[in-house]
Length: 398
Image (cartoon, rainbow, N blue to C red; front, top):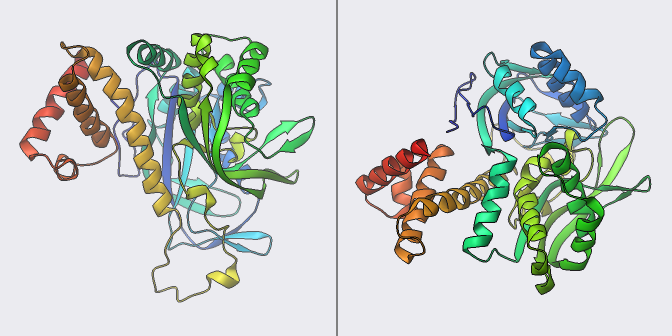
């Protein structure tokens, strides 16, 4: 199972059949610096240069390939201040940066890269020390995601409602223009293109998108438009915020599409949504959150204050919320797995036990101690320790 590291040299591992994984780096500037608003091009360039050092052919494919890109990159999140046409990064603050791999080749490339990882991120604008590495999206593969949805559909009725939160500006290309609205056809078309490129089960686009148009509706939303730089070519208008989608009753007439629909939802945090996801746009996570509807990045005038006083960072709360969402997502995956291994299939007791095991393992994977888990779950420490040991044994034997 993946492990988390709190040192500059990560101990992050995943199996050779992994096709999807997300990692997050915590970065600290070595000195205050200003960066252009399109600084994500520098992150993009640095990442591809890192991959080129270990696999020039893979780097060239990621840079020049005409198909969907097999990775996504976030922008830096943290206490960022606008100053004219530049962004200010301060040396007394930390920032998070996420990388997601979408194919087996890229997952293996990341694994090789992490055997001798860099200590710094060198941008043209400034130098940042890598303080910490962590797995922020669990290692998995497309077959597992597909089979999980199939098993869930067979054992129980999957939810016909779900929420996605778009934490960075999200937009779609529509006849050479930007479409900054979460129209279901656009959202799921962007996921399906990546699925068809990287999964081993391809679906015909027009038929599935026709089903999306007929069967997927927006139940509620809380979004706003936001303009951002997505490269040197100019600005992009996108949307940020949360959207709740739902399935109409007639959706169940096509069970395979329902299964694909849920598999694509599971892929959304890895894929990102819309275009330019390799330049920080379209960062997505499951669940409803007020993260993306927070106030825009403050200007230097509104942010001036005594540097000796702690400045509340807008990223810390979102990062905690993001982790809670990821823990809940991982808990759901593990619960299905543990419940399928229980001898008393269908029993309420077995389902409750599977859920407790899943919560303990999920929290452990994201760095919580057994003592903290016991406190959170209001269970005796020895009980949690016993459950964790049994759950790990089941995972190892699978």
